[in-house]
Image 1 (tube, rainbow, N blue to C red):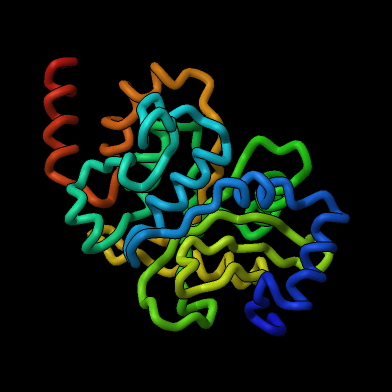
Image 2 (tube, rainbow, N blue to C red):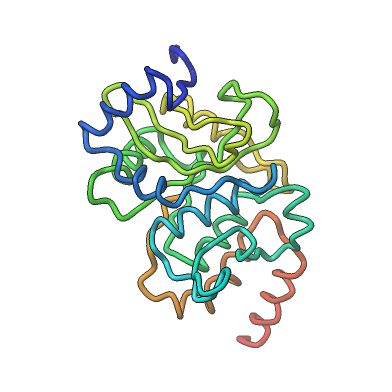
Length: 249
């Protein structure tokens, strides 16, 4: 149905697909991401590493120093409502990624079950088109793509799209184990339908991220709003939200 499921980016076929995407003007994301590429530091930090790479690619100021005088995003500078130990143990959920991302940038989240395939392809074309100021991160099932070694979901950004052959380029942040690959867009869409292993069991999906317009206001007002709908339902965020609601009432 899909032909060869995955095509290694550095293979002869992978290079041919990339040249085609370049000719079509759909590799804008690749060059932004490649100059800021970083591999995840542990098997469960795909979400944090993907977000850090995208924030750097969008040239967003982290408003804090990383090392020395360098102002740079890395996964250790990104903090979720959950503890580092918990994130290291079980990774991030779809909602948790959204909650953290919107504290640093503008983000549109799309659950696969609430998004048509046609809309997904439209977004693929839009974020990879020449002059685009957006980057897409996908949250999908590795096993659905035929990749072994990781049973649960994974996060990685999209670097390009070959519309003629309907292939999307996944720039895999687990570089130590998985290469970047071209995958059929329909297969990738279906791989996002796998349910998360959390209390709500919703589908996975994708995110479209952009540099924020008002970062100062965003960091102080959005996190508690996201926690109201977060499937992780961590006690820390719920407690903070209830306190704020009671004060409003």
